[in-house]
Structures are given as structure tokens and as C-alpha cells.
Amino acid sequence: MHTDENNKIVKAAQMILDSRHAVVFTGAGASTESGIPDFRSPGGIWDRFDQKAFDYSTFIQEEESRVLHWELFRSLGTSALPNPAHYAIGELCKSGFLKAVITQNIDGLHQRGGAPTNLVHELHGSMNNFTCLECRCKLVLDAVLELARASLVPECPECGGILKPDVVFFGESLPENALKQSVEESSLCDLFIVIGSTLAVYPAALLPEHALSKGAKLMIINLSGTPLDKNADLVIHDKAGKVMPRIATYLKNHPG
Ligand code: NAD
Image 1: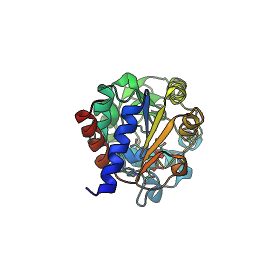
Image 2: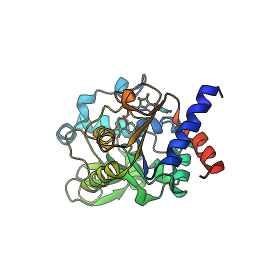
Image 3: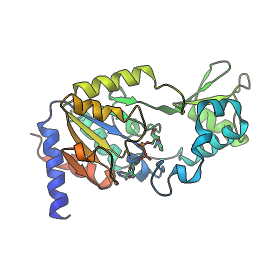
Image 4: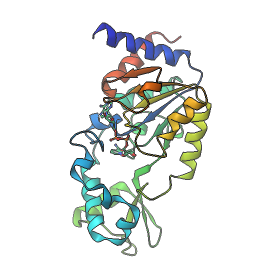
């Protein structure tokens, strides 16, 4: 590894060691190394799908939109596994270096990568659970995938209603509890670490600004630039799956 890269890893680890309450905030870039495409990188989801078809009212009203949604769910890779970034974040949570994981991701990979469920706040919901919009019955992803094998757009097995994943669509509010806890964590923290997010989706992208306004330090680990790079105390433009395990190894060897 180059000296400059090495220095940044040591600085990142030192910032975590010096912090009282460090939280991470992840976006789709934390899961690209698990084979799940992000939205805005070249070849990402918005290069293949028309964003306009993905709001809540279109999903409810148009069968065609539900067909597109199902094409997208299938392409999000329901068999994806956690990558080294998820495992490193999980390890840092368990060793107490990280106090919370605020995620915009809906893939559940932080929990499968070892982050304790009570520390993970899913701002945009989870695709592991579905609700029927008619009878409100709940189904887990595996049951819905079983139905999806026989049908392009699976329907509720109880009443034939529309099945919607418990994820936040454009035009829907964020889940109250996850939002409340994420705002609390952003107020409390003295170090806010952004991993794999363009910081372009609101209101989620307000959280790092909120943490900054409360005096927290900001670290950004992202392949491309973000609008908050200029406000950050440390920016690492590299892959999360390469950077996070190195930070975790350093902290294991220098526990403070
Ligand atoms: P985004 O697509 O706007 O940005 C992803 C960012 O991650 C980009 O800036 C890119 O440069 C960076 N990136 C890509 N691979 C990376 C890597 N290996 N290491 C570090 N950085 C990397 O994503 P966003 O900001 O999360 O906003 C998109 C919205 O889409 C979010 O609301 C999220 O819920 C949703 N989404 C979720 C998933 C998922 O659950 N895995 C996948 C796609 C989109």
C-alpha cells in the first residue's frame, strides 16, 4: 500500500480511537462489493431503469410499474452475501468502537455481517419483509420469492392483494422509529463516518449535515466525490471493502 493510503488508514483509525461516540452512515456503495449495484455509479440502477416508475403512487396504480419493481428486486441480488466492509463494520460494533450503523440500504447485509440488530437503523426499510396492501398480512422475503418463481408479479396468497416490500418508495415517509433513532445518533455522536453514499438522497443526506452542525467530526469513505467532501476532516476515495478491514485490523492491534 502507498504511504499516503497508509497514512489515511492510520488517521481514520486514530479518529475512531479518539472519539467518544462514533457512528457510521452507509449507502448503496457499501454493498456494491456484494454484487448489488448502486443507483448513481456508471452502470448503476438508474442507467437501466426509469426512476419515474419507482414512486409509491405509480406502484399502486400501474401493473407495468409493479413488473419493473419486480425486475429491480430480482436484480438487487437476493442471494447477495456480506462483503469485507460489512464484516469489518460488524466487528467494530461488537468491539464497541462503533455505537450505531445508520443505513440507507435495504439489503440486511449489516446484520448478516455481524452488526447487532439493535445498533442498525434502517432508514429506508428492509426488503426482507413484505406487507399485503389489502389485508395487511406480513410475509418474509423467502415466502415471497417462492411465489415469485411462479409469477412475474407475486400477489398476496391470502387475498390476492398487492404485495409491497417494507422499503421506502419515492413519495413515502421514512419509518418513524428508525428516523428518530438516526437523528438521535447524529446529535449524540462526535464522529460521523459516511461509507458509500453520494449524499444525494434526502432527508437521509441531512444527517451528516446535522452531525456537523452539532460539532461532530466527519469522515467520508467513498469511491467518488460528495458535496460534503469539503467539510470533512478526512476523505478517502477508495473501496469500502478495502479500507474498512484495514481500519479494523489497525484498531485490533492498537486497542487504545
Ligand atoms: P448512490 O448510488 O447514490 O451512491 C453510491 C455511492 O457509493 C457512489 O458515490 C459511489 O461512488 C460509491 N461507491 C460505489 N461502490 C463503492 C465501494 N465499493 N466503496 C465505496 N464507495 C462506493 O447510493 P446512496 O447514496 O445510497 O443513495 C441511493 C439510494 O438507493 C439509497 O436510498 C439506498 O436506499 C438505495 N439503494 C440501496 C441498495 C442496497 O440496499 N444495497 C442498492 C441500491 C440503492
